[in-house]
Amino acid sequence: MTTREKFEQLKEREMNAKSDAERAQIDAELEQLADSDPAEFETVVMASVRQTLAEAKALKVKEQISQISDIISMTYIAKNYFNKSKSWMSQRINELDVNGKPVKFMPEEIDTLNFAFKDISEKLSAFRISC
Image (cartoon, rainbow, N blue to C red; front, side, top):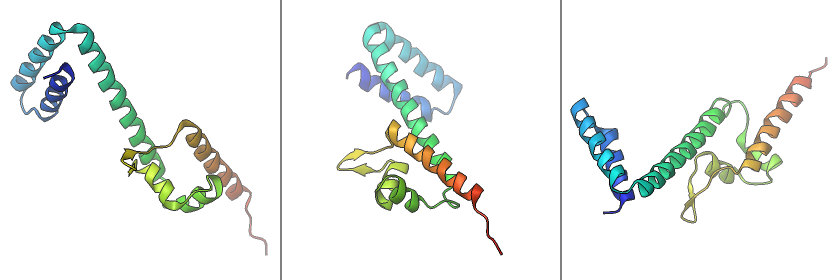
């Protein structure tokens, strides 16, 4: 079993651990794994941290959008700011698999999305019904 596989197995066990004793045993196994190949262990841990951070950022985007998705039409934003379909927008918000790969907003698309929200906000602020 590779260092990566063993680390992932221990990480899974840690998340499902039900007692402090079980967590202590897993910590001891992690220390042994780190001692057996420090360079590879560091590489594996850093890759895991990057993946976790990316997942947290993705979740953050979805949660932020959910705060306004009942107010603002995501279909309108997809069509008018991205020239894309509702399904394209949904795939990125929910990070669905497209052609076997999860898709997400690219940094420039986040900029466009932020511009869209700001632009819509300004249009709503300036809007007045006259009698």
